[in-house]
Image 1 (cartoon, helix red, strand yellow):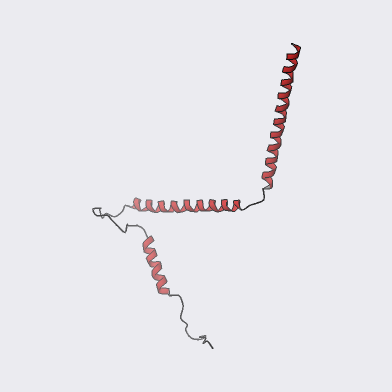
Image 2: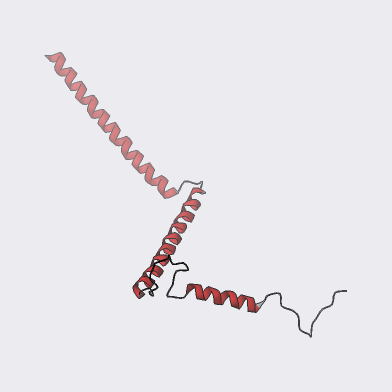
Length: 126
């Protein structure tokens, strides 16, 4: 029979100190001002200017924003590819355009036929 430790202390499977150290190291990585981990020999050891630091942060933030927006558009496009039913409002609009086109073609064909008939009548009368 397995022992249950109801009133006593039990060992937690999560090491809180380890998690805290990961959080602290992540905070050190992300706090401003950012400095490069590597500097090429001969470069100056000057501190980065405030504008440089914020420009770098703004560039990274902008890149993340663009990626997020493009991901959103990609997800919408993927969802629209899965739709198999033709939208009813689009079907009505296409039907109206087709009807107008057919009417325009019919009237232009009738006008061309009338013009040709007029030319034939003029040729026979002459």
